[in-house]
Length: 528
Image 1 (cartoon, rainbow, N blue to C red):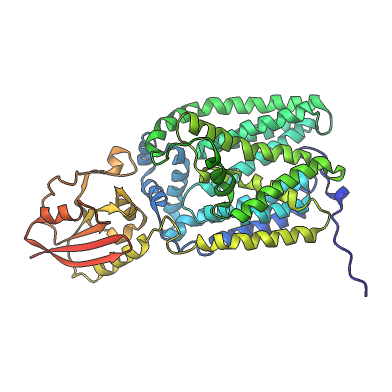
Image 2 (cartoon, one colour):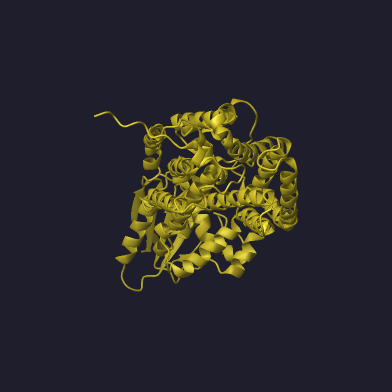
């Protein structure tokens, strides 16, 4: 019996009609595939999301999300306005769902699934249904995506709004070029999503500049049906919502730029040279996987070259012209600003580009007319991404944090105390960040510290509109301890602590218990 012929993609059937073609995206076959890939992305993200201990960035999320909306409004005028919209959404989420580290990260896993589904839809619209499906699978395998899916931060949501904005852009351009009814409504939607992008994470407004570059290319080369004039008309339509969004975001940009020095103090000086290669070409999308980075960038290059060089793939040129500016322009702009003005670049800040990266990679994986070839490449990417996925779900995966085991010990020991015991907490230096205190740990695991009197607070974080409280100097006298039965010290030992605490409480107190958990020292003092 002869072997079956290789599966060949029908290029005529999958060829879009130009920038923003609605071929396949309207087909009932696309949405089931998109939903299936989206669900797979959610599953890949959510599995093991409860395992790693919380860390400093997630503690900031919880410090903000636990406040009332007026208190949050006060805070964002002093710090972290760039994440204010996400904090407000998490506040609402925790009004409905009980807090846990798992429930903190669950919205990010859901957002990962939504972004994967929309990546399939956008990829199908640009390069055909099969390329869209491959793009969605590539997206769910990217290490930056699998990391964002278990992070109690806004990164997964930035991917959702970025791919949504680009999908709306493509549809708006297509409907304007073809003079379709109510094309203006899509530009109104474009403006609304663009505003959401900026409010969710200010770096995302650079997508608008990338879209402008794409439109310029389409106008210059007379791309798509209708020639230059229809695309020039689309460019003018793009200018209206973009200008309005720019004006509306000016106060927000002013606010967030004024807070940058306070928030980005940890960033070191950046310069030119080979030091740019690792963060931009490896860490940005592929994290620690150099082999996956090599395959990914090679596929992007192959997809771009074959779209231009092979006549049967010329319909993919608009996809290249759309994806490459979004992939390259935002990090380039931020990196230049980081060198010339002040450090602003961090690899995880560009998670919003991952759907477009996935589509660009998919163009390279599907340039051959045999689907089995793309399946083999996807299998290779899955093998290469597996170590990253696994390492991200280890107990100490997030900055080496062991906060969960330390707080579990505290909770267990407090549960065994006699009823009515009056506990106080002395927040010591935060492990690995001794310029901070273990108030970060309390923000992430509040149940372990419930009912404790804070001996180190001078002004609460809520009262001063900051993420963290204003603390007494280490050498400042302790408050009255007459209503305290036990004092808990939790933190990493330093030259000052817990020695100064022991000197301050004096000889009338003794060490009742002491534990060491990772970098934590946990000590309990009782009266003699």
